[in-house]
Amino acid sequence: MTSLIFIGLIVLGGIIGIPFIRKQDSGLRTALIIVVTLLTAYLMANLEVVRRAHAAYGRGEDHFKDKKYKQAMWDYQEVQEFYYLPHTHWVDLAAEKEFICRAYIGDWIPPEGPLDADVRQTRAPEYEKYKAEVVQITPVGDISYQPAPPTTFEKEPPKKQEKKK
Image (tube, rainbow, N blue to C red; front, side, top):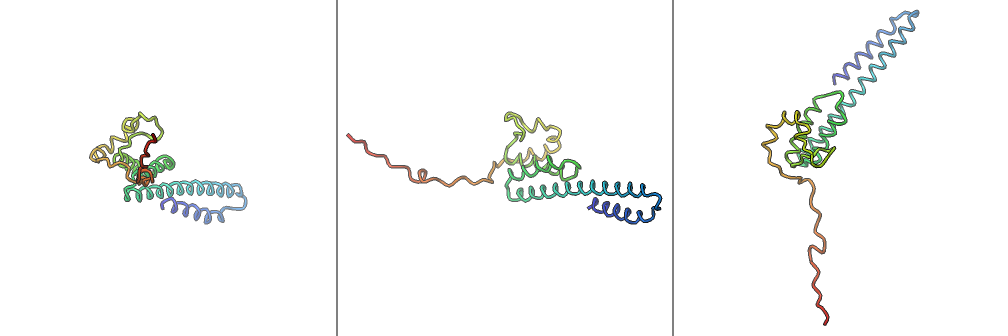
């Protein structure tokens, strides 16, 4: 929202200021238009990144409410990986929620591997921030995926055939 206000002020300032520049200063007018355009494009790009980070965090919150911890963790990782710059509070909230999701499903393997690594050691400074909250959580496992229905073979095992003599 703040970026939108800045964009409005820059555009409004450019529109109001441009007519007051004299005809002899056409180079200054052109430079002002270029600067205003570039600044507006930069702020719009930042606004889009913040909007996408907020949307990804919201998806993670929806999954978290439904106790789909694995999907929520993926959404929180998306916020941290793709929308880190400009650094917003959504990134910090997503980092905390990712550790909470990991505690619920008992998954401490980092997404980038290796399989014998532990996120609690590889990201120790971040983990220390949330350690007090995370250690109180009892893992429930990943309950977001339902098991496959039993096959016909599992329902009715084949009958043993009599051997011929």
